[in-house]
Image (cartoon, rainbow over all chains, first blue to last red; front, side):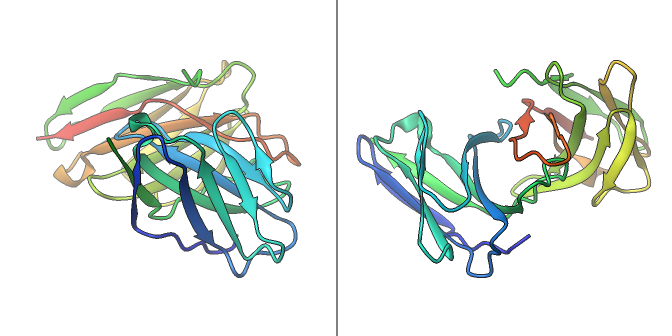
Length: 112
Length: 115
């Protein structure tokens, strides 16, 4: 699976959009981008995943650049409950049985 | 609620002891994964079971073992415990079809404290 690079930490004002970047410059054509988050000491929570097209669900939007070398997770209206560590994970498609490999992630602090 | 249940939530034990952590996966999920997260450390994959059989091993110590039972629940056994084994232990489950891209669902973890 391709390596990802994320900023160590970010701040965001409550009610504003939180844009979390992820660099995956060595991504292959058959690798998905997944995002999970971990709210303090809780189990990680799936947010969204995508291959090449932008994706949106009730939690967030995922924007993947055309060359697929980077992506951005967007939380449109961040709340204090969104304070968490966000993990960007790249994984080969069709490997649903394999364990996820977590990096260090980005610690997002939503400020009141 | 992810649908994955882990018990107990908290466990305090002495060095040298043995403990068993239990995980009930989501209904229908065949694969169970165990992770360890020490204080200020990342999530480290320990071991995976699929439909009762060991599927993959990560950074699991020889003092640790796991199994998955016919009803698909799993247990992680930690023996000869050391202070450094104090951590959060998470279980995750997924449908884990060979060609799937579905997400994994995590339990709320067991916090183990070794004193």
